[in-house]
Length: 433
Image 1 (cartoon, one colour):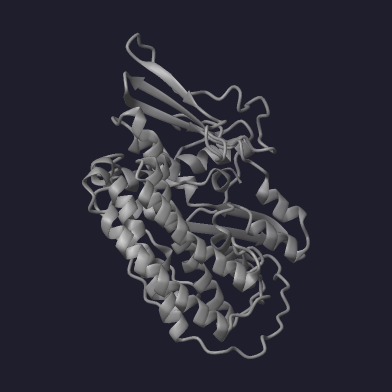
Image 2: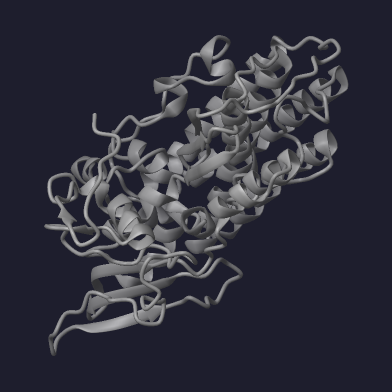
């Protein structure tokens, strides 16, 4: 494998995207940040309008959208300011009447320069806080990737207690977010009962985070080399009681939801992305598994207690439509509850935690992978000769999966877009960093 090469400033290099489309966004990012040009890349576009981009003349205002010259077709622009309280992004539809022929999604409005901040902040607490704020709805996913990476950089083997807390919190976050998404999908198809019940069921899960660590989004819970809020037998009993109440209402509501003809009429055969498409764009997580592409870090690269206590079998679907994405969430909620119960069965009060010296080794390269609720999260770091961070790189699952939404809405009515969008529920800030 080639890991580095020198080129002249005016030299162009061959594009991997020309042969493998899943390299496209990576090459756009490299071109945007470093000014490297390619011989045969189909269309280099700004990815997130980085603060330190090579060409400052490229801005959000002059983004080069795809255009189709036709008297029959028209364009519809949505965003970046939306009707709901959501993150900013621009969606440019090319339509023939009500039918969507093409969608191009322009992101970058949420760019904060997170990767550079990791280099500028020297305190470990500041970096841990940055990690859990990469994507506000994936606090545990990104925080776990960061702490696993940092402990690897420092060549530290962590305790069973830390592995337990991180694995349990990760699956609880998955349950909470999937439940909230089922509520939002219900709202988008005007099924108010589903919206009310699923929405209510999310609350006790996030409230448990509040009881465990003082924050409903679990901020402050995951820290390198330690845990500020040790799990206890009292919390164990509380969580088991929450699951008892949750499962009773959740399965009853899901039985109604997935068998109601008016619900199925909106979910089935809407927003289809097939296996070939998700493979070509490099989709990860749910956006891959909905179309029978097995992408799940818990199985391929087990971490924390997925290495020993939990043997993960990914939930797979084949249809690639909104129904597949909704039902996959339902099955993963059930699976995650079973994982949490297994962890609780193996729980015993932990002793006094060890004290770790978290000093990064010099000239070291580390990668950490976790499976957040959306999919694969990757954090990468390189240290210099003094052991200081030289490079910190982050890849959220939404980096890959926004392209899946663009493909999903093709040949659908434009009125189906909100439902398709919510069925993916991708992160703007996770992409924009």
